[in-house]
Image (cartoon, rainbow, N blue to C red):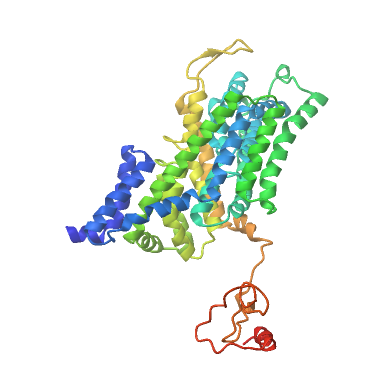
Length: 519
C-alpha cells in the first residue's frame, strides 16, 4: 500500500484538492492544507527533503514583491470609483436614448455600455450589478422578454473578463510568465468579436421575435436633437479619454500596466470630483472593497504557492505533462482537452482559483508543444468567462439575481404591476451567450492569428547574427588604464585576474591593443 501511494502521490494529491474544494472549504486554505498535508506525507515516505518548507518564506516574499500584481488594486479601485460616481448610470441613460427608436435598442445599449465599463473598470461584479440596477427595470417597464433582458445584462457584464484591463488577464500573464501588455493586445480583438456576436444575437432576436425586444415609445425618449448630441458627448468623452489614458499608454509602450492602473485610478478620482460625486464615505467604501479583493487574490496566490511547492516536489508537473501530451491530435488535441478541463472545473471554481491552480500545470505542457502562451492564455480567459454565466454557480447569475425583482412591484413611472424575474428565466437567458462564448473558444483555436497579431512590429533577433567579442586571455575587460574603479590610480585595488590569466601587460599601448583584439 505504501509503495502504491508513493508511486501515485501526485494524482492522489490533485484529486484530494478537488474533494476538499467540493466540500466547500475556502480555496486559499484548501490549497495550503493539501500542500502541507502531502508535503509531510512525502517527507515521511522519503520523497521530499526534510527542509522542504524552509523555502516558503522566500516564495511568499517573492510574490509580495511582484510589481505586476500591483496593477490589481489599482484597476479595482478605478472601477469601484467609476461605478460609484454614476458614470454607468449616465452612460446607460444616454446610450439607451440614442438607440431607443430601434427594436432592441436598450439591449444594444447594455452591450455597448458593458464594453465601455469593461474597458474602464475591469470588474465583472461592478458591471453586472450596475446594469442590473439601472437598465433591468427600464427593460421590464417597456415589455422586454425577461430571458433576453437578464441574459444580455449578465453576459455583457462578463466582457470585463476579456476586454483589457481585465484583472484575470493580469493574473494569467503573471502565471504564464508573459507580458501583461502583450496579453492585453492579444485579448482586444476576441473581446470586440464577442461584442459583435452579442449585437448580432440581438439583431436576430429583433427580426425573429420583435415583441421580445420592443423599441422605446416616443414618450420615453426625452432627449432629442442637439440635447441628445450634447449628452452623448459629455457622457462618452470622459470614459473614452480614460480608456486611452490607461490602455493607449500601455499599448504604445509609454507605461507599464501597473503605471497605467495608477493613472487610471487618478483619472477615476478626477472624474468623480468633476461630477461632484466624490465624498469621504464613497472613498472609504472603495478602499475597503479594493483591500478586500486584493487580499483575497494574495491569499489564494500564497496557498497556491504552498500547493505547487509540494506538487512540483513529487513531480506532479511531470505527471500532468505526460498525461496531457499523451492525448491524440498534438497541439489541437491538447487544446481541446485543456479547454474541456477548464470548462468543467469552472462549474465549481471561479477565474482566480482556476488561474492559480490549473494554469501553472497546463502552461509548461503548452510551451513544450510549441503553443504561443499569449494565445493559450487568451483562449483560456474566454473559456473561464463561461464560469460567470453557466448554471448553477455562475457568479454573474448570482449578481443579477441579487438585484433583479424577486416579487411583483408597481412601476414608479407607468404605475403598472411588473411581474418578478425568476432564477429559471435568468439561467435560460444566459444559455445563448454561453454558447457564443464556447464558439469563440473554437474560433480562437481555428484562427490563432486573432491573438498572435500582438507580435506584429516586435523586433526579432536572429541568434546566428549575434557576435560576442571576448578579450584576449590575461586582459581584464575592466582594466582600462587610468579608469576607476579597476586599473586606475584612484581605484585602490587591482582587477581580479581571470581564470588561467597570463602575466599582465605593462605597457598602456599594449593594454589598449589587447582590449581591441577579438578572437
